[in-house]
Length: 171
Image: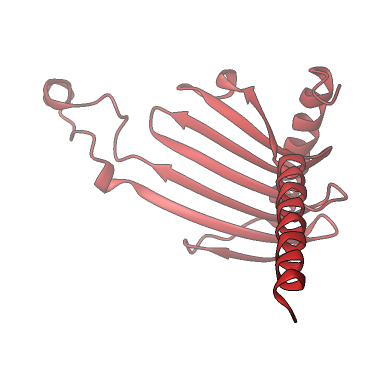
C-alpha cells in the first residue's frame, strides 16, 4: 500500500468514525428517560412523591417515597415493555420514636430520644410473572400476603398511569 492510498483510507476512516459517533449521540439522546413526578403528600403525614421514569412512550419504573412521623417507606416498581410488573423492591423503616422527639421533649414525655440507629428496617423483593408474585425474599420472618402485594402494586401502577394521562404528559 502506498502513502497516498494509506492517507486516503485514514481520512475516510476518520470521517466514518466521526459519523458513527454522531449517530451514537443521537441514539443516546433519543433514549434518555423522561421523568415525571407526582405529589402524594396527602397520603402521609410528612409528605411523599412518586417518580415515574418513561422510556420513549413506555413507563418503565415507578419509585414511591413516603415519609411519616414514625418511619419512611420506599417502593420501586419495575415494569416490562407491555406494562406488566416484573419486580418490586420495598424498604420500610420504622423509627424507635417519632423523629421530632429529641432532648427536652423526650425527658418531658419520659421517653427515649429519636435515634436513627435504633430504626427497624425491613426489605422485601418480589418477582412477578403475568402480574402474579411467583417468588419473594424478605429480611423479616413475617408471612407476606402476596395477593395483597399484587393488588397494591397494580392499583399504584393504574394510579400513576391515570395521573400521567391527566397531565397530558405524552402530548
